[in-house]
Image 1 (cartoon, rainbow, N blue to C red):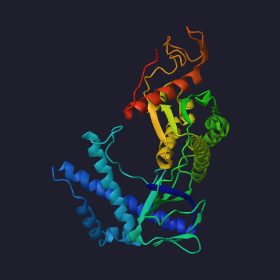
Image 2 (image 1 turned 30 degrees about the vertical axis):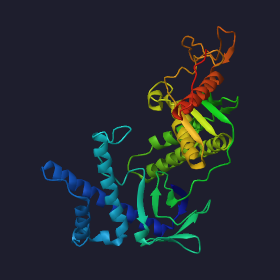
Image 3 (image 1 turned 90 degrees about the horizontal axis):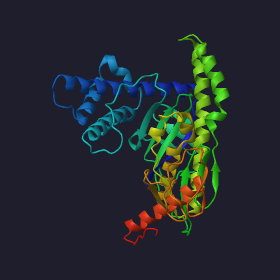
Image 4 (image 1 turned 180 degrees about the vertical axis):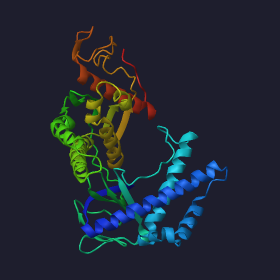
Length: 382
């Protein structure tokens, strides 16, 4: 299995200039290749093969107009073309229905004002981690890295990224083997919500941290300061970075919290079942800010990835399954329950907590689907 190990990088001012030059050259090569393919399409010519674009890059580097492309590693430029080719393949596969998920648009021109700039080095570039624990990159130098953990194997590539907050990161692609955790008999169903982030079928609850709501005052102050600055000025650029750093802190805190919670759930349970929520649809309602702040999609994706890595079972229950209206005791389905109804009494006399009842039903539905997939006998409640 291939994984990415991400680390913070602290380049010197001179190295930042070298990285900016590499970002710019990769961006120009990407845009030139995109323009060439668009021109060929508009003129009714056959599509330009990937190898032809690579040959054109080699020739254009010898011209006076593009001679400065030789100031950066050639691998960076070739990887920019590889990204363009991948973007086109993804677009055509999406149009023809070969690629699942949302429709993918045609690749667009890259801008120096994009919030994210990145370059990639493969083994052909001969990047290396030195004995002094620094990352040596061709024509850039040795970058200082904040190592938070050891690499499990030799990396096949490294991507250097600069985000909107002006921070630099190095992302290594490494190959690791699956590390199965000791088996356990526990299984859990999870009901996600806003007032309470998650209610587990075993009775445990996870409070909603609401990181964005907590940082709203600071974000509002930074955004107001940005809006008062004149466009094009240095003070506006500084204010924009302050806003970006405030948002980055919220995102990093939410991601770290989601990692810790998902790791705990995967470690303690052999099987995990969640409801297949339509997050995009919920994000278009009046609860959009709270839905985005909760980060359900990121949390469930982490559960799925860690379950595959550590030998656990993960499944999503159909979003149309009436987990809230179904009584977990007798199996009777009641009427629709508004959000303000947190507890209700079934005709059988059982008092059902809205979230806990849904979590128990999600667990039962996930188990039934798992047994059905494995060929086991499934009996409906009487």
